[in-house]
Length: 325
Image 1 (cartoon, rainbow, N blue to C red):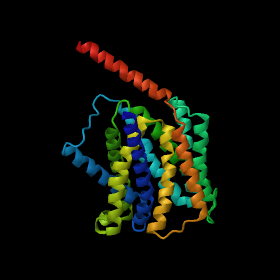
Image 2: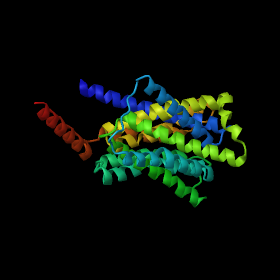
Image 3: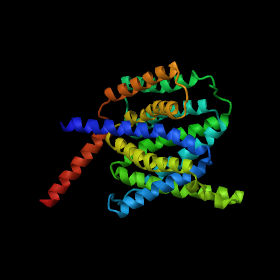
Image 4: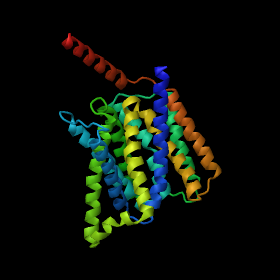
């Protein structure tokens, strides 16, 4: 019974994370109609930080970073949100949307590679095949679009690869640090760093343009404000918390395919709310992605990292019992 409840909680967290990130594309598009990318990011993470501060003051969450490995935690926050969003923002702006979609879809592959080396998490051959099937689903949908174009801007390609590498390192670091930090503590630190860095960039941009007063424009624009609240509260707080929670419980390879499920959600959201068409290849690609996600998790196994964590936890429990006795 406990095993079923655990599996259900993980499945629910995965579904919610994919859904929130999937709809985030819609809200990001809406906000970017009236805001610059870093202006949006600054308010997104400022709202997220405000939510965490309120929860902390109300006693809803507890943050205790004293005596913990802050150096590795700082590296995690440097990878994501800082480097990931900077690379993604710049890369998307100087490349085609099709190229960006394909490169970002490669994230599960990079996560598997990094996890194999850093965490000794090696997926089974069957899992590897299903991961590649999921990635292929995204690539298939992108290639079938009439606007498909790759390689027009090599600099943009490398910058987008920087975003993927940053996200891959973040995933394995979050998994590694889950033995020392709670998902709340990791997410809390991430949004604080994001708020400081992106607000610094945004303020600097407005000062250079001589339009510092425009920094507060999102507060007066309903369209921007709704998007900022969704991205700040749902994406940066709720979704990132659930992502860090998942990474603390199961292998990185199984979590990695969530990003491709988000692609399906974004296509559906675009069709419903922005009247964007859904073609037959979207349906085929979605089937490939969902099949890949199912197979990746169906044929998962308890990895070396998880076994080490359980042994470490058992050892600590035994030592504590001996001391108490």
